[in-house]
Image (tube, rainbow, N blue to C red; front, side, top):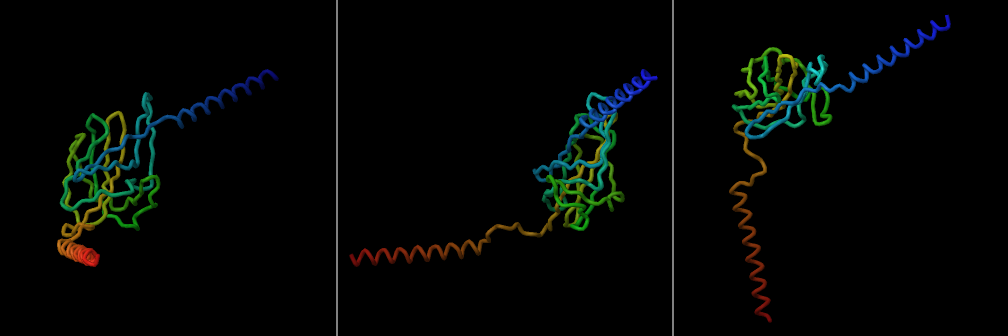
Length: 213
């Protein structure tokens, strides 16, 4: 009877070690999808990574991760409408499925403030305007949007690799808005006249002092 208890105890220890090993392996396994890139007017933005199921490298299983919202970078790309966005996916092989949606957002739609250079946005409004893209690694997206802040949500799926949602943030400015921080020609002229008057006054003072000597 004593020997049986020892054997049962050993079995429990071995089983515990096995379970712990599996948990450690699962925790250390890396299955993070690589990000995508969006380019507008020559400026690039690296995507946020949202819901995904991604195959673990050198393994036969995948790890799935769900988020409460769409994840985007903290700072938006700035543009005017209409504009062309160039999407670059991280894998060389084209995806099996590819699509996107655009959603105008405000501060009320943000689930949390920027943490680690990313922001999270609500899902509402993202299912009604889903558009398919050609199954290419570098598709082109032509958009015409009203001024405002937009979340661009991209969904991609690769056979035997996994699926992932990418989030981008784009600020569409008013087409008629002038670029700030530029000095107008009138301001430049007025500034030059003031500078010229000061230099003339200094020159007169110097001449008078020289004459007194």
